[in-house]
Image (tube, rainbow over all chains, first blue to last red; front, side, top):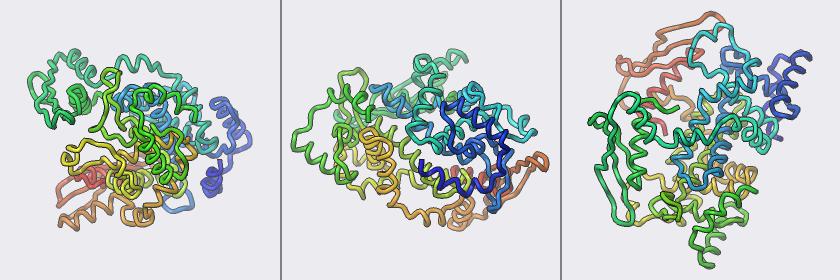
Length: 252
Length: 252
């Protein structure tokens, strides 16, 4: 891909070179994961460098770690998953697609997949870092950075196949969809678990026969808790349920 | 692109066909915008259909509008802009890239570009809709849906060039970067405009010489207002400033 060289030229020059031995080992590992020899191993080396192991550069204020590649990989992954779901569920609305995507691309699941791929063995971080945060996203961040590196090294069509065939296959989509298809069922399940009564009420109806908008009020134990609106009663309830799930931090 | 037919086959069959005249007019307009004849005009027809003009389908609970394509186009646009900035600014960190991206991909600027491209003339919506929301994102939403349609119709490489050459050229990136490069300057400018004193203080310092974390407290008129953390004092202040900007709704 023509971009790769242009962007990395200055970065490469700042890197300490890998020893022949280290380079061979990393190349082999990457090849094992993506199924092809990487062109530019420096990209992958960078993808594995956690912020805690970031290195000073000769550019003032700029430290090198996998954060930039993580930013890129997050966008690449988000888009590929968006298209995958768009194609797979042609008759589901964007609320559904957004929710299923957030259940796929979240810290917990990315961490798990990173470990399944064995990325954790290659991550460079400061030894003191481990203890810092029990809800760490080090592995998932490295996976996102890895996706960014694959994109820069191999182009869009390759990374798209990699994500679909090597990452998304770790998910049981049917069960994700069945168990968590909507916020309404999530909040109702939460109520059952926590012994709270959940009730919806359409409190307002605007517009004319042609264009309607509904407002739904969600009550927890008869106390107003969250509101939502939508073009149908169902959508308004979904939206109120979503607000409630956000308030209760129930969303992955 | 091979996907396009597979996904759209069922949707196409639900559509009322365009009259030859309407179809010609839309094809010509799309060609004028993207520089090539669209293969599947139905995609673009759908991209212009606002929710308020959504149509019932014979699939229960599923109404057709541009919301699904908007969801897809949002992800496509986000990724292309992410890569564009990643490449353009090889020595800026992910906080900078994220912020500049959010200044490009926001409701206001997408609305404006949609109008510049003339998309507003093609949007189908319910006549009563206009008055409903003064902060409407109808045009920007249609632009995102349009980007989704271009991707489905022409593939990634084409949509990437379209976004870079036809959308991003509407932005004066240098001035975006200069004026709004950081949250700290934004919050300080806000303080000057609103006559509030803004002050930062490093309240905590954790870690050892190798790995440090700083906590910054932002004060508005000597009242604690927002907190942030980071691997350098500068980053911690940026992070506190970002939290303050979010609280004050200063972010596009």
